[in-house]
Image 1: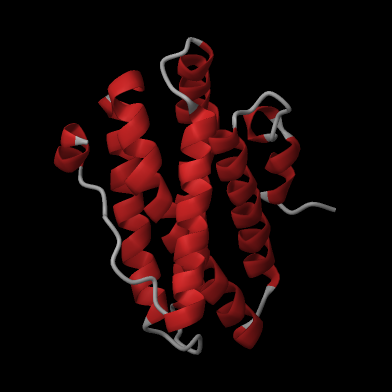
Image 2: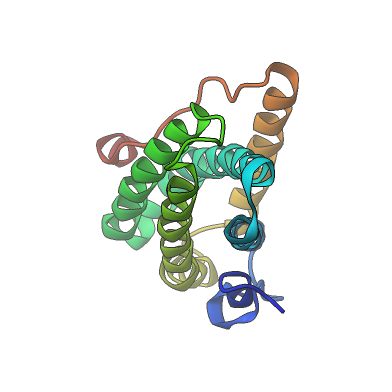
Length: 186
């Protein structure tokens, strides 16, 4: 039986659809993995929870980076600032919790609660992206205002580069963190 979050992967706008452009399908597939991991985290204890949290922190860092460096600057001029700016603020909140989790060894009293809150915030964020931002971007793509397939190629290439960097160095390294005023210039 699918967990509370994983079940959403097969519902409504969360489903990876045949007509989803590459950028949308790539990001939705990542969203599916986050829902699966947060469901697994609910059931996990001790070392297993730490292992899941570590994977979540790494995957979220890469995911937020590619959205902030590539997707958000591309869609903001087309779909408007509100959804993108809200996403940036939600990313900032998630990054704060990720940074806290990365400093912990999993034995702390609040470790599980921090993973849970990260899950609640992340699921809220990715659900909104699936239902609102991605749907608006797909409409712009269909109208010829965005090329979400080309953007998807850039997302995939940057994602691979970041994962390779983590493999090589153990760290994400320098990324271009989004700020609303910077995206205006992009």
